[in-house]
Length: 160
DNA sequence: GCCAACGTTGGC
DNA sequence: GCCAACGTTGGC
Image 1 (cartoon, rainbow, N blue to C red):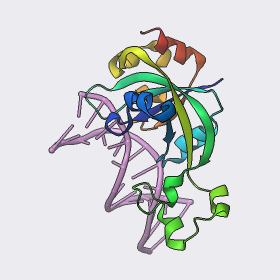
Image 2 (cartoon, helix red, strand yellow):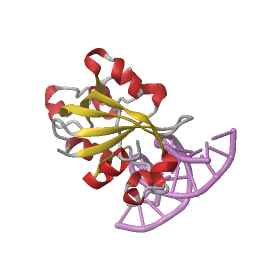
Image 3 (tube, chains in turn yellow, brown, orange):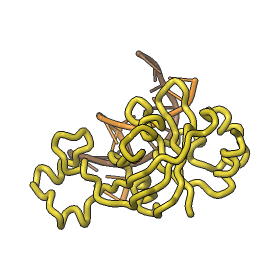
Image 4 (cartoon, rainbow, N blue to C red):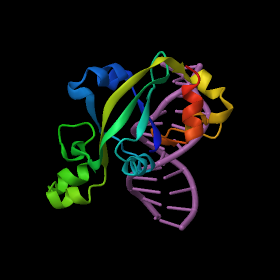
């Protein structure tokens, strides 16, 4: 099993929202960065993912979900009414099954596992020596999906 | 709201 | 293929 972290703005989709969603499951769509997308494509069933709340009053790691469906074509890229639409598909009217096979953007489905016992603030994560190489705490790094090593994962859990 | 840092775009 | 301009991210 692999470990990951994904950022979300809690106004859009918080750990509470995932916990109260039907089947406690949400589609993780709208990722429009190639590096983040490639990490999502590497996710396997049962991989665990920290949910990180960003761009809000209390930024930090809030809970854990697991991957319940591996990468598939992100439907929002074909949806002209979605803010995540990729106009390359709409303009050319190529939102076909064939296109979906080779779709540029991917989504995964995740299912709620647990809240952490408390929200672990970014300041505490930055102070963890075990996390010093992780993109989450590196200055200027904006990656929204990233892998965690076993050691990094355990170091975060130990903060609780 | 500010602004540093980054990824993407597009002219050349 | 370079690189300036632009838009976005995201902490503070």
